[in-house]
Amino acid sequence: MPEEAINKTTYSTAKSVEIYSQLYLWPYEKVLFDRYITPGLSVLDVGCGTGRSTYFLNQRGVTVIGIDMVEAFINHGHELYPELDLRLMNATKLEFPDNSFDIVFFSNQGIDYTDRRLDVLREVYRVTKPGGVFAYSSHNSLYLPRTKKGWVNFGRNLRYFRLGYHFRIEHHPNGDLHVAHNNIWNEAKTLRQLGFKVIEILSNSQRFSSLPKLITGLFTRWPLFVCRKPL
Image 1 (cartoon, rainbow, N blue to C red):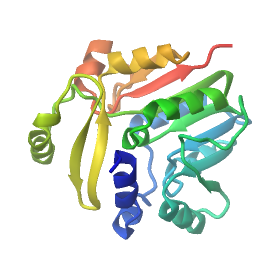
Image 2: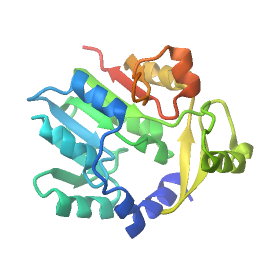
Image 3: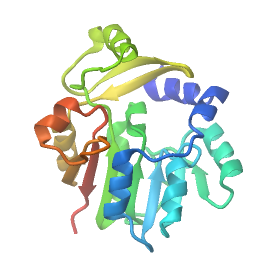
Image 4: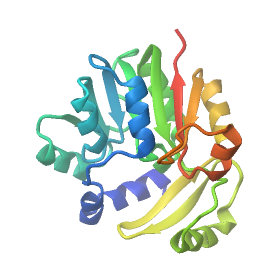
């Protein structure tokens, strides 16, 4: 069974909806929004869940559309935030014309829960305006756990361990998830091959969002990639 289908089943549970209905921003999302989000821009919020990040983007005076492949998320999002434009849609086939958005944002490592990552990246490139920005967070294959739970998951996945792109199985209260991992150097190479220019890679540290690349590549669990589509 493809990873995306397994993950979609897990995310469709009532427990998942409960977990992903919390309202917050990660430290590097705050940095990203402060640097790149200004009133009047058009923004696509991919993997929006129940509207967590879409809510904060809307507060910044942009025209934002949130999309997610999980119907339970979108339905609950409509109940929580009736003012938001939330749509059921798969990121592998974006239902928008070419060059539609100034900013495309894929939050919460959502790109790591599909086995069709290249299709997603190509679609994002297509709908991003020339000169526009694409930002997303992803699981770092070189990151070593810092908690007991993390080491348990890491031990269970040693047989899957690769330095580059690969999937690991994680056990969560809402069910099992098949999660893609990659190192920042391979990830950046893929982005360049698709035509993006990598602007910066942010750490999720409370104090230091911009760190030396080697530090980010070894000690950031979910690096956030910020790219630009050339003019």
